[in-house]
Image (cartoon, rainbow, N blue to C red):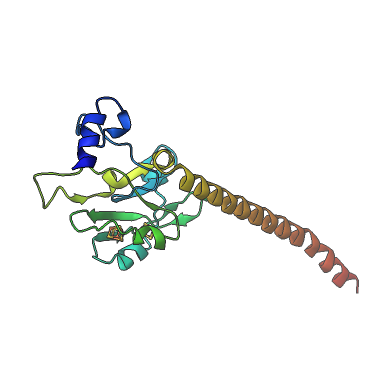
Length: 194
Ligand code: SF4
Ligand code: SF4
């Protein structure tokens, strides 16, 4: 009671004694490690073209309450490294069941799924409206950087390093092939003279 009285009277003089906010007019800013429900990251401007998810379905298998539903595409499209990959023809998450455990994020090998901080998702339709589809789940990498800057910077640096490594390997393979192609006629010529 003493603490409550201190906060009540003190709040007229000191801002830090005001321990509540007048929600929904005011909101407490979300901390960087806050997590609510998952979202899917896309690179660039086009959510369909840039979606990182390759529909490997690991998150679907590992999700404890089984609230992720994925259908793999029949065709492939280039991923962020230009490699042809499958993509999710369907990717839904039932947020009425999701328990925000983040296991889907931990098991994803492609940094495709991360936790969003959005929490005002209540609805009168408890059946259809809480099944979130791929178009609603897709958020840009810029959104990820805005809500989890430290984590996003680490992921961006790692993906850039992987991309540079793959480009260097492709260049080395190309040079080795070109070298082998120029060396072949010389060997044949040696064989012809002997
Ligand atoms: S946060 Fe947990 S419960 Fe929710 S979709 Fe991911 S794995 Fe499933
Ligand atoms: S979000 Fe990650 S783990 Fe889940 S299907 Fe897509 S690539 Fe695989």
